Amino acid sequence: MDILKDNPKKLFTKYFFSSFLGSFIVAIYSIVDSIMIGQYEGALGAAAVACILPVWNVILSLGALVGVGGAVYFSYLIGEGRKREAKEYFTISIILSSLISAITMLLFFFKGDFILTLFGADETLLVYARRYVYSIRIAIPFFIIGNVILPYTRADGKPIIDTVATLLGGIFNMVGDYVLVFVYDMGIFGAGVASALSEVIIQTICIIYVFTHKTELGFVIPRGFIKKTKDILFSGVPSFILDLATGILALSFNNQIMRYYGSDTLAIYSCIGNIVFVLSFSAFAIGQSSQPLISKNLGAGYKDRAKSISREAIKYVFVISLLSFLVTELFPRNLIRVFMKGDLELFSQGEIYMRIYFTSLIFYFFNIYMTYYFQSIFKEKKAIAISVLRSFVFSLLFVFILPLLFGRDAIWFAVPLSELLVFIIALLLLKTEKNN
Image (cartoon, rainbow, N blue to C red):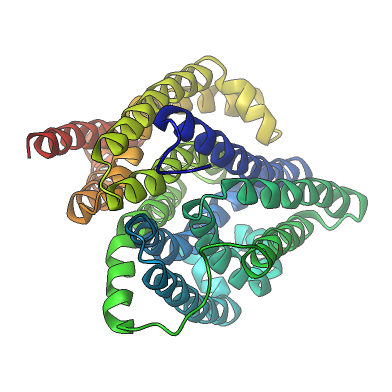
């Protein structure tokens, strides 16, 4: 695929479906983990997953900070024909992610219980969550460094590499989940082992690609290390916040639900969290598909092509928003049954909570895309503003304030209200950008 010459609409479609397929596979095998755990361990296992999901968000956010931030500059520089400088950003990204991986792995080895408790696990749930997280600690570098390499392979014009690697890893994970959880009776620990091994497979394929194929990716001795590090980190902050904020919001919800309800309702929120986790991959696929295309065309001076790609991406945003909203509103009980065993009363409560929470999907995908869009045109301050407002201002404020003012059930309106306000702000920021 020629990013600078192919038809913009067809180009985006190819990139999106390749990225979406890879994201969908990741989502599916992540969901398989949760389903296997919920069916094997019951409601307590499902509740423990609610404490584990934020851990994933933190790990993935660290990779996005360096990977997406560096890939934006890589795409732009390749578009300008400055290939050596583009490789310097790739080299620095790998160095930074290696350091971050080592620090993160040590934290999970020595402070794993503290981290899980922070994310809402009480003494009972800690027993389950510990078994899962302890089995993936050694693979943390693969998760973080891998989340750096994937944006670069897309920026290099080879999104199919993501898809092939993720497909093979996903198949292994799903088969491994069943075998280790049920056949070998390893339960939640087996699900963690399967996830760790699948990520090793995925990233090994990507690393082989970098070193054995003709590609713009490569290692050089970087010049201006400090400046380029700042560029990467500042550009990557919006994506970092997107992933991290999901974990922070889950942390807040976990603690508030345990405060007002208990572990049964936390199991329901675990189902919601898993569905959001799946949908987030679709949202990220739109942004991650458009990002290298827009940045590279801007670098080459093709502003009209960049605008055409963005318009196509927004069409996909609204179609997927509508489909996601309809499915979650029409079939909430069916979705709960997929993830866990439970009684009729618990399912009835869950239906109500899910229908309220998922009204946020009307605005969710657009808000995510706007973060990636402003990032791709180097309007990092606007991207950061959207990320921070939806993640650390409105959502957290409503999670704590609404139950105090209107009773505990008002907590389920926190995310819909937050997404609505951010949607309005994003539209205003987009309007100012078009007027400039």
